[in-house]
Length: 193
Image (cartoon, rainbow, N blue to C red; front, top):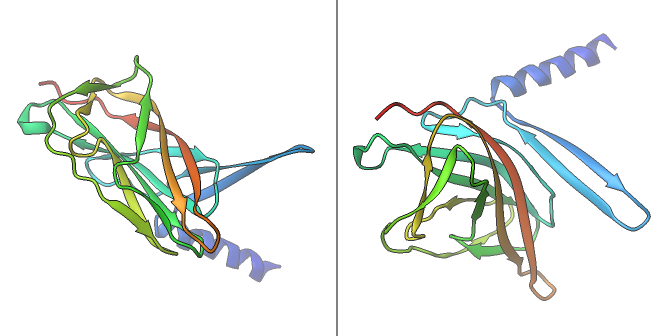
């Protein structure tokens, strides 16, 4: 028994030293349906210039959401911080999944600490992405040429809903899928201009 406890403690210590996140799942059952959600909380240090978020999503098929981040930038030295959201997904199944590289859509409350503003933001660059088993890709919003950006108005929490569509192209006809991720980020107060 003592050896088993030491083994479990060692596994926890190794995982925490590697900065590994943990997954917590919940499942609701009824006579008709089964709904499963996965909540992910990162225990790893967030890279400089980023705000890492906690997130929840309902796993569908062979796509797993690995992380959500908010990348913080200072455009053209203006002193205003802009935010670009990033969601990293992985194909955990045996058949390829496909989506457009600019497929990520974000929804933020209008009274949030982050505001969507329009701009003439350059040319659109889009590609069609195919992920095989074990491959991952990071979707971003806004992508180049989307015609908007996200301005960080003040520090504090912000709730974001991400949505993207993807297809599988396996042994049966292609199937369309949608994934929705609910995330929460906490931003530091931006510097005064």
